[in-house]
Image 1 (cartoon, rainbow, N blue to C red):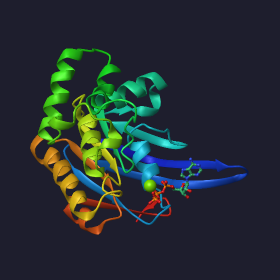
Image 2 (cartoon, helix red, strand yellow):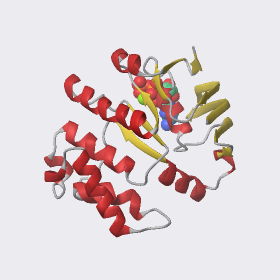
Image 3 (tube, helix red, strand yellow):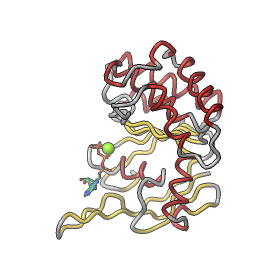
Amino acid sequence: MISLKSVSKVYLLGQTQVKALDRVSLEIKRGEFVAIIGASGSGKSTLLHLLGGLDRPSNGQVIWDGQDLGQMSDQELARFRNQEIGFVFQQFHLLPRITVLENVLLPATYAPQKNLTQAQTRAKTLLSQLGLSHRLNHTPNQLSGGEQQRVAIARALINQPRAILADEPTGNLDSKTGRQIMTILKKLNQTQGITLIVVTHDPSIAKEAKRVIEIKDGKIK
Ligand SMILES: Nc1ncnc2c1ncn2[C@@H]1O[C@H](COP(=O)(O)OP(=O)(O)OP(=O)(O)O)[C@@H](O)[C@H]1O
Ligand SMILES: [Mg+2]
């Protein structure tokens, strides 16, 4: 279970305070597929970042299975993210100068108990399952957008996370490729019970989720 307890996030822009999230409380159960929707600037990415421990709230608590992320040191939080969560972003965020296989392996090289031989095998299996066996030694700029996002999904899965947090994962893709990416994510949720939280502008994606959370002006609507 993931709980947010009265979470706020205030950004300081010079002298101005921007209240990106305003006392948001919610609970997401293990294995759920939740879509987060709302207008541009409403606070969706901020919410996802706080849920995933990429950033810390100004107030309130983010709790995963009883573990309060706010009580963790930066190092503990980095380890938590590395072990428990797979992130997928609109811009893919692959490293351009290393190969597909190396990109997928990267989170495994940061893992505390490294077994790189095992990770290599797992990376190749994941890439093969995602239809990318023939692309292992390519660099990201040699791939299409849909292929790059599949590499990002393989990277998100390499450490066997409990949850995938995706911020507009189809935002840079045409609608057909976007549907393929969503099919992959949904299947991971359905067959492996991986909790899936997807920020999206796309009503057809939101419709597929079991639950839709709408954010307006930093609050749950
Ligand atoms: N690092 C930052 N510094 C200052 N203000 C920020 C920062 N990040 C976000 N904001 C502000 O916080 C608010 C919420 O931003 P957020 O990125 O969460 O919106 P969003 O719903 O994801 O929008 P979009 O759909 O355009 O991605 C916006 O007003 C934004 O300008
Ligand atoms: Mg956003």
